[in-house]
Image 1 (cartoon, rainbow, N blue to C red):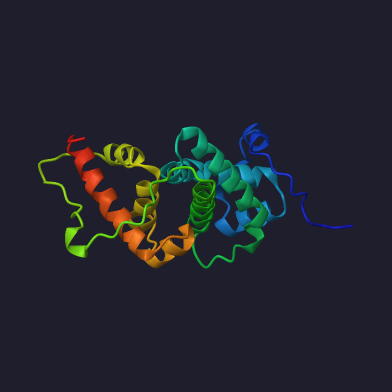
Image 2: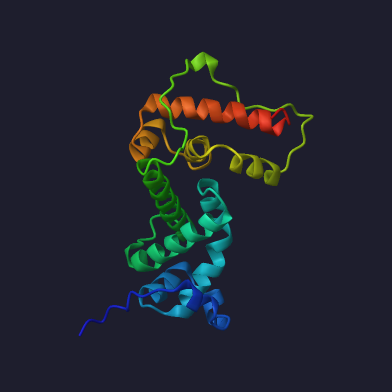
Length: 205
């Protein structure tokens, strides 16, 4: 008989649990990982509570709306708990979970592209000298919330490339590989995204 935990994970069940015991609040990251890998739901709930807010914001950068962002986060956490036994501690748990959320979100976007949903990833090359400098005057006072909201208003293709390159540290080669586009397309989408975002932040569009 297998000793592996049953891989049926419902985040709704975790949300309905009583708050984790106090010992879980002070457990080390590795102890939480071990408990999650063993299928202990209170440990899974604790991990969910620790990271769900940040992960929802990450998914929102790629999703078309808040509902899809929650779906992406939900699917991402299922993958987290199914694979958490593979976590080796070479990076922080937050970094590891973040990468899963990003990859899961990109995968969902890529599927939409392949299904023919318009994502505005046309192959238009722009010379490097034409790329808009992503700078705002010091007099323009903006909060992180302001910028986040305007990023979410970008067309899906622009937003995806901008998020991957500027916010999540992908190279243009990596973006091209992930989205099945050329590096030139990635560069042009980034340039257009920056230009449009600056205009939105300045209230010009």
